[in-house]
Image (cartoon, rainbow over all chains, first blue to last red; front, side, top):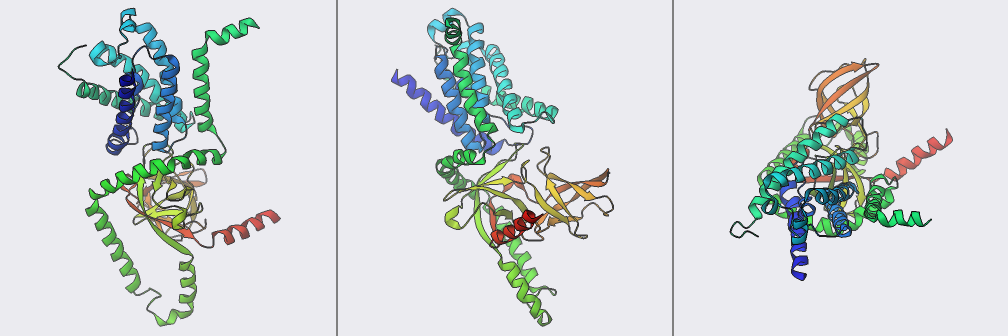
Length: 172
Length: 278
């Protein structure tokens, strides 16, 4: 139990540090500006209660806001993503998955499943994020383009990270 | 009534979601800058500390570029001092020298390091490692060797946040160097190297490469600080729409100066008293 919580805390800090000190330093163009911190919410164990999913979404969103010097946009986007995650997992996972309390990552669910899952949620996250940031529909096309390109970049980095950080030797 | 409670319990996921989303959206839409500044300032201590230790490391990778830009700036300043038309070395401008000394003396420059920066948003902010302890106030501007950077947004004891020029809230009074026509510089959010001036009259003659600098009309920046040059322009209605190629490299900012106008309060007080009488 405590071990699980510790692992999650470590993940939280590690993913946020990666976002702030690596991704934000290297990849910051006007059109492509990826965010990898939603990975933390994506790979939470499936039996995490909805309250914790939403609280943690809010928490990691607020931390992202503080580091990006924005007010509330990351929190709002991540909470929205966490909300959709609950529905997505309820429809896209079998009973067996819930009984084993797996983490919905590449190792457990395969590349195709994870790509669709991450793509949908990341697209929603980035879209909400950039719309709230601009706060106008005047530049709608440009904002959508920015959201789509950034989400694609985020997806690519997240999949690479998943492969890099999964221990290859043992299969659960 | 029981049905109402049943509804509430049945959709408790939804209500938790609504509460969290509401808190976030209040932060986003809050028109009151005070709440926002409390939120940002409480972060300044921790986030600023983390960022300044990371920027300490990062600056080592750019030492050569930083040194080169400082040497270039020194060269420019030496040229200014010893050039023919400088008021420092010519006797016939003694009276003039007195007033310029006063004029120049109104502005205090405070050196600062950029600890965090972004160019990717529609509204970009920077964080600097100077604060009220160094004499920064909310009415200061920020410049670098190559040009204007932005306006101070909020100050805590050891850090301050800056509204970058690349922000929809940044409006800076700019002028064309050769003809001194002033206009307002804005950024349309598309390219971090191009800003726009839309209110210069169409009779003004423009050419590509014409210099653009601060007008000194806003009491925040001194006159004649470089902003950039005319990139393209077209006449729309009665005005020229100018696209300005910015001279400040926003992607690679490390050393900047906070400019403080010592007479800011006196000047704005006078201006407000005129507005009050109208």
